Amino acid sequence: MDEETGSERHIVEEHLDANRATVVRKVSGLTWEQATRRLGPSATSAAGVLKHLIDVERWWFRRNLGAEDDVPFSWSDTEPDREFEFGPDDTLDSLIAEYGRACDESRAVAAQYQLTDQIRAPRDGEPRSSLRWVYVHMIEEVARHNGHLDIYRELLDGTTDRE
Image (tube, rainbow, N blue to C red; front, side, top):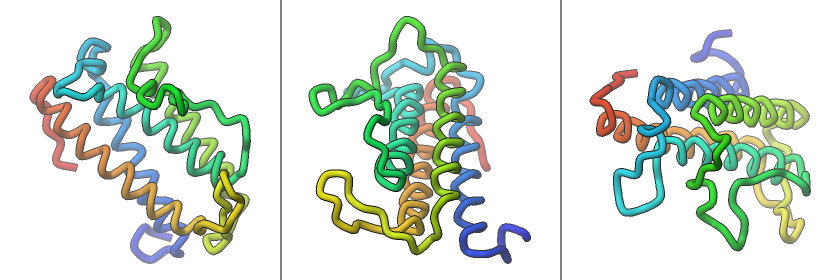
């Protein structure tokens, strides 16, 4: 099956995976100093966007779809911006590897469900949306952050990418 004529599931999975691969391509080759550099008034950086996307993967797939309670996140209710902070052991390579693991975890959870399966909100247990909705939302989320990474990359080292 190719991307244009495959099943609906194949198409959304391929689009999400293409966006995920673009994230890695956008941050690859930056130095740690570049990746953590803030270019505006917020705490956002290229590495911060990557760390945010790790949490987003785990939030939507493991926490919401898989209903796991002990999912690790960088942020918390008391430290909502912690995903934009870095520890002494953090490197760009370690964040890229963690993102890869988070995406693999997401794929494993999603494989257990059909597109129409409902997910329940973690706070109240009420039906919320479907795997189809999660896939479409994640395509939107990752694509939007790829736009941010385009701008960061151009401002950091002048790299532009037409793909």
